[in-house]
Length: 128
Image (cartoon, rainbow, N blue to C red):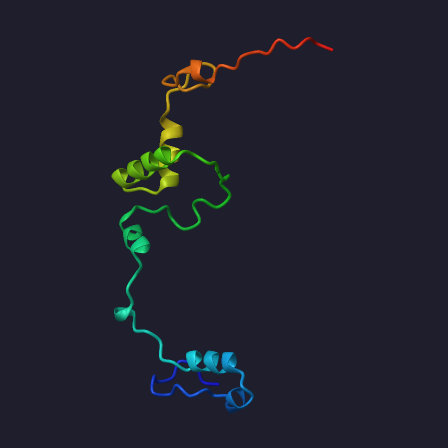
C-alpha cells in the first residue's frame, strides 16, 4: 500500500475492507493515503507556542537526575509558573534556582522559614 500519496486518492486501497463492511479498516486506509499537511499550514497549539521562547537545557542534561514530585496548593504552583516565566526558564530550573540559592542555617533549614509553623506538639502518651 502506498502511503501519503496525493490527496485526490481517498479510496481505500483494500477493496475487501468495504465489501466486508469493515469500515474501520476502510477509514484507516483512507487516512493512510491522504496527503500530509504541509508544515506551513500546521498551527501549533496554544500550549506549545510559548514553550519555544524559554531557555532549555541541552538535550540529555537532565538524564540521571532524581525526580522531585509533590502536590502543592494552586497559589504555590502559580508562584512557580510566574517565577519561571519572568526568568525565561523552565519550572524545573526555577525550583533548582530556589533550592540552590536558599540561605541555610547550621541545621539545614532555610533562614527565611518560620520554624514555629512546623513545630510538632508532643503527645503525652505513656511509654509501654
